[in-house]
Each structure stands twice: as structure tokens, then as C-alpha cells.
Image 1 (cartoon, rainbow, N blue to C red):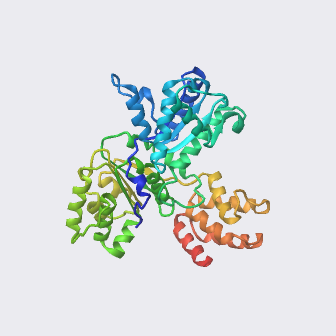
Image 2 (cartoon, helix red, strand yellow):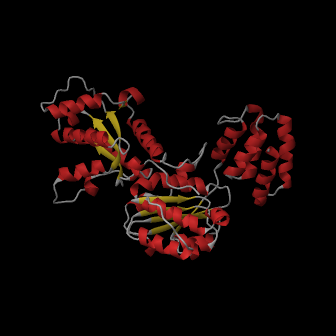
Image 3 (cartoon, one colour):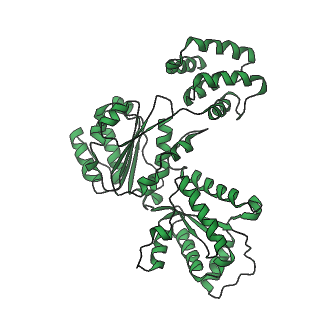
Length: 416
């Protein structure tokens, strides 16, 4: 089992937003930022927006400063209208202050939109000092990076933030072809914005990528919750170690305190008590039996408002019977994704070598997008000649596609 052993200085701060953008008031910048917001939304990046999140009738500044404090990425878009705006310069001061106080919590990105900082001399010393500090930070410049093409610039910014958000405390793996697009389709934003308790499932065959998706979801969301725990390969862990150690580990993840549990019933009772008042993210990976679900996440009433429980497994009916409200079927990779993943293991490059191309196409069509099978076969065939490939691929016909696990087991053991 893997738990949520990430940097405590980050864990102590629940974040409300992935991104806060500070920008000027001219129409060109507003148009650019609107496109950026749209791209964020498509990628499931939760950004603070004044027209959505500011409370009407309340003072603007305190709400803006709170949003800055509760955002992971702080984007500052420099333009002529920004440096001439007192409110923008005050936001810059606050952003730098937050970064200095909690360097592990916030990441600042300075963006120049048709702008150069030279010659800007604000009257207020604090603003001048903030501009001097900002000038020393790395800059993304629209002209320098993409020759002024805004669409490419927006894509670059949003891709960078998306990838950083997915780079969390859990190691997901290498060569994650197609992973982020599948997580993106889960529309995770609805769970960060909700005060309801949600229970969702990730369903698919063995080796299809359920655990990788679950880890990516955890990395993407854990900062939005007060407490979190990730339990990997639950059924296997319980079989080897029993239920009590698993319950104890979840409780310790949630409370950050050591806990003695004498029975499964006591463990469930303690879990209900410690989680009932918290906004919790709990991921239960590899659950195909009822007992772990009943002992670790008996019902929604165990959890505080806004909690999210994610369960992965191969038994769809079990998820339905336990009241899982949304079940995401993990689909196999498409042809291009499969080819890239297979080649990364067969040749250590994204594309097939020319003399092997037709053989690669045969493998990809045969495996039908199964990630683990593609990896195993790629490793098995690495370094072999065309003739050896032909001989080995002839053996594929012995294994019908519905016995993909037999194929994986056979070639894995041969590889060893």
C-alpha cells in the first residue's frame, strides 16, 4: 500500500484554486486571458475568476488577496495596463509576499505580453521593489517563445501548468502515453467545486491503466482537500497483512497521528469519527471484494462535506452495488498511442525503425490498445533481429486476444 507521504509544508494548506491570474484592464489582455481561461477549463484546471468567485456587495481587495493565498500557481501577465494599475501592482506585492512566506505552496509564473520592463518607475516604493523582484524571476515572453502567436503561447502555458499539477506526491510511472487525456475526460473540476460527498469508480481489465489513472487523479486533486490517503492494491494488501493495518494507515494519513486499532469494527468506527468532519480524498485501488469497501468506505455518511472517494477495480457490478455514482470505463489506447508506447519499449524511441514498421503494426493491431501487453511485448522484442521478431510474432497466433493475461504472463516469464 502507498500512502500520502508528501511534503508536510504543502499538506498543511488546503488550496481552493489551481491558478490565480493577475492582469491589466485593456481589451487585448482581457481577450488573451479569456482564451487562457477557456483552455484551462478544457484541461480541468481550476482557475479563480472574478466574475464567478467574487461575492457581490463585499470588498474586492480582501477577496482577491484570499484567492491569491489559496492558489497554487500565481500567473502575473505584464502589460502596459498592468504596470499603470495600482490594483495590479498591489496584487503583485501580495503574490511575492505569499511566495516568500510559503515557497513550497505557491509557484509564480511571470508572463510578458508585448511588454518590456525597462524604464518602468512607479511612485510607490513598495511597488517599485516588487517590480525589481519580479524582474529577477524567469519570464515567459510571447515574442521570444512563440514569435507572437497567442494560440501557441496559451497552449504552452496551459500544458505546463497541467503537467505540473499532475506531478504530485505519487510516482505514476514512465512513458505515460494517453494518461492525461483520459484523466482530463473525467471532468475533475466538478469534484473540487462540490460540497457533496462523491464516490466514483475506475473500471477496466487488469493492466489497462486503472492504477496509473488513480494516481494521476490523486496527484491532481490532493491539495484541494483537508486530508488524503492513497491505498494501492487493496485486495492484495489485505490478503497479505489483514484489514486492521490498512485501516490504521488510512486513519494515520487523515489525522497525521499514530493510532492503535484492536479490531476491524473499531477501525471502521474510528474512521467514521475522524473523517466525518473533514473534506477527504480517499483512493482505494485494486478493490474487487466487498469487505474492503465496507470496512474502508462503508457509505457516504462516513465522510465530511465535499469529500471524494475513488475506487478502482475489475468488477463493475461490485462498484454499482456499493453505490458508486459514476464509473469511468478505461478504454485501450488508440492506434497512434499504442504504436508510440510499444516503440518506446521495443526501440527506446517514439517511432518504429523502418525495417520493423510492418511488424510493429501487426503487434499493435493484435494487442488492441492494452498498455501492459504493449510494454511487455516491447521489452521482450527489444534488441532482436527482424527474423527473430517474425518467429516470435508467429507464436502470437497461439493466444486469442481474450487471453491477453496469458500472453503477458508467457512473455514476461520468457523475458526473465
